[in-house]
Image (cartoon, rainbow, N blue to C red; front, side):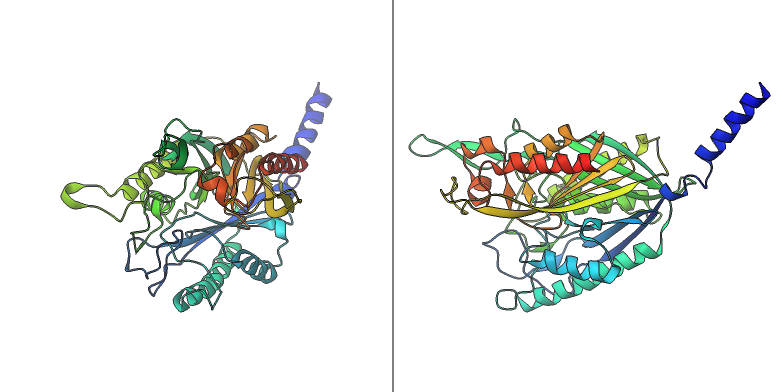
Length: 424
C-alpha cells in the first residue's frame, strides 16, 4: 500500500510540477496606443464622401495582444480603422515582421471596419497629403504598441465564453422595381442569416487580476453613413471604449469583426450623432448594448487555463475569380489570392481571413472546426474583397456584384480553413 501511494506521488509530481509544464506555460502582454488623427483627413468606406473630417466624436486606438508559450509567439493587432486597403497590408506586415523577427503566421493584423476613420493609403497621387502622413505615422505607432506589449509579457490565465447580441442584422433586403421584378439592396432583413454570437476571451494574471478582454462580433461598423464627417470607432470602437471605461484599472478590450460582409448594425448609415431632447445617439446606443453583452459574458467565465500550446499557420490560397460588377465567372480560369491565418492558443482557435467574408461562411467554419471555441477575424492580413456563399449568386446584390470571387470560391475557402484548423 505504501509503495502504491509513493508511486502515485511520483507520477503526480512529474505530471503536475511547474518544471514539467514550463514549456507550455502561457505568457501574455497587452498594450494600447492612440491613433486618432491630429489633422483633418478623408474618411473611408463611402465612395461619394470626399470632404475632410470636421471633428472627433470619440478617439481611435490600436490594441495589441501578444501570447507566448515556449518559443512560439502570436501577435494580435486590433485597429480602429476600416481595414488595410490600397496595398497597405503587405507594407505594414512586412515592417512589423522585420522589426520583431516574426514569421507570417505569427501576426494577425486586423481592423474593426469602422467607416468613420481615416482612409489608409500611401499613394501620393490619389491620397490626400494628410492621409499619407497619417498612414506613415500609424505604421510607427503599431510598431511602438507591439514593442510595449512584448516588454510586458507575464504569466496569464485564459478563459472563454459566448453570449449573443441583436445589434447586427442581415442587410440583404428584397425590393421590387417599377416592373415588379425582385431586386436585392442593402437595407434590413431581420429574418436573414446572422451569427449573433459574442465570443469573449478573458485574460487575467495567475492571481485573477483582469488584464484584457478580447472579443469578436459579426457586424459592419456602419451605424454612421456618408453624411457623417466626425471621427469615430462606430459600433465596435464605442463598445471597446465602454468596456474599458466600465472595467477600469487599465483593462484593454480589443474588438475583432467577425464574418459580417452581409451584416449591418440595426440602425445604419446615419448622418451623425443625434442628441436633441434626450435622444441617445444610435452609435452610442448600439455600442453600449454590445459592450454590455461582452461584460455579461465576461462575468460568467469561471474556468481558465495557464497552458498553451501556441501554434499557427499562414497560407495564401488562390480561389476562383470573376470580374467585379458581374455575377458569373468568365470561361477562362481566373484565380484570386486570399490570405488565411489560423492559430491556436491553448484550446481556443483564431481564424484570420484577409477578406470581407459573409456570415454563412463564418458559421460553416465554426461548425466544422475541431475546436470548441473558434474566433473568426475578418479584415485580417489582407483585403481581398467580398466573399459570398454560392447560393447568393442567384440573388445578386451589392456584395455579389462587387466581389472578385466566383460562386465556387466560398466552398473552397471553407475546406482550406477547416483543413488548416485540423493541422493545428
